[in-house]
Length: 83
Image (cartoon, rainbow, N blue to C red; front, side):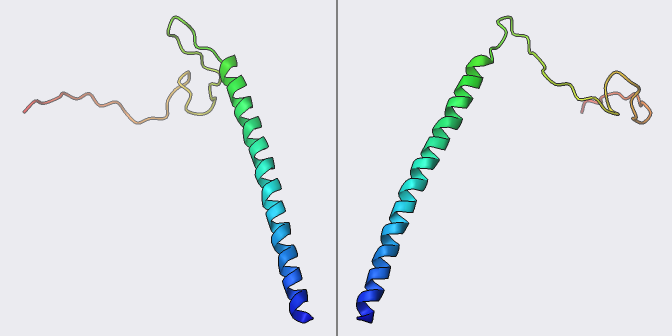
């Protein structure tokens, strides 16, 4: 009697785990398809200029911006010595 009960619970556990795996895989596949579709739509929306220029969407602003005075050291002039 106890052996049948243990086998029954093992069988139920195996069936439930198989069903959970199936549903998780199908939901994961739907999520991956949705993300891929979103990426394709975004990539098709972005176009490169035909003249070869580059569009900059974001320019960081901060202490080291090229518009202001730099915080570097003194400039040292040097010569390249060829061997």
